[in-house]
Image (cartoon, rainbow, N blue to C red; front, side):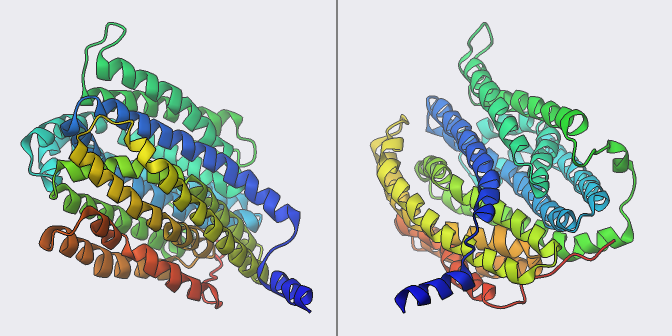
Length: 462
């Protein structure tokens, strides 16, 4: 009887055929490897800049918070593209998939130009939003001037490599990351410390290294898409054409909420940085260190969320809704396991990673406490990320997710974080928990959403 009950449970909620897991792994593994490489670059950036002192760590960290708004915007555009292109690809409509590529690239080009103009024109004013420490503002403003040149090439390559996953090609992002890893580390070493006859640019050298790496990424992606990729046979002529009303309508219905949701996430992350920035450079430096470890521990979560969004999107596009539900529960159970493993990794390796940085004992103490908070947070981060950025988004439930992000981030996390960090001046451990309380709430809320049928929205033919 027990075996029969177990069999009924598996049959109802868990996908058991090997083909599903093989397909998932082909998407997950390249994304995980890409994420490990990207986080390795970020860690080396932080370690190298950390040799210059806490002001330099804070300056690059806070300057990158503004840049991260653009990155989140690109991730939103990518998510919108994946939602639409995976469903159209599942329906066998490759012509519309190419049109989706045109549309997302048009949007990211316009957005990149706007961010570049802001960074080049108002670097000091942008830094003053995040901190009031003059040495940090001065260094961060110089950093932002160089990043103004990075937005367009990075935005295009980021969106291209992400949206390519919707047609089952997760390798492009991996190849791009490997190339970026080698070039970025080498260029950072040369320009930060003044090697091979180059001037020692300090924190600006990190920005120069990133610029060089992003330009190479852009060239790599462009050549791959136009000369190597054989499924879509994409041509850039569509970039000068306006999208059809029908396609733009579907983008507005299923894609735009994802863009808004990820942009709101970026703004929330920036407000978090503002709150932490006004708690002092020791807290900012500690958070920068903890963030690197957090991202390393959650690379499998990123891969799972990406794979679940693509696979469920293609299944919904095929019209197999019951199959999509079962796949959703399967990915949810996997996210719990992966989240628990991530928490253990942060606990066991977090304090070790702190020893890689040249920081004061007081900063080290803060970093340890924030690392302990992160070990709890990443468990719930895995669950809510897989649900919100993968399962439900792949099913087209983007409008509901947008509303959930607005409510829980801006009505819970940000007010509680401000209250804990600025008003009550709680220890950094509790401030970080407060700032991430939306992860805890959404893990439960979105699981209940998965139980029904309302999360499935198929894209209309255009």
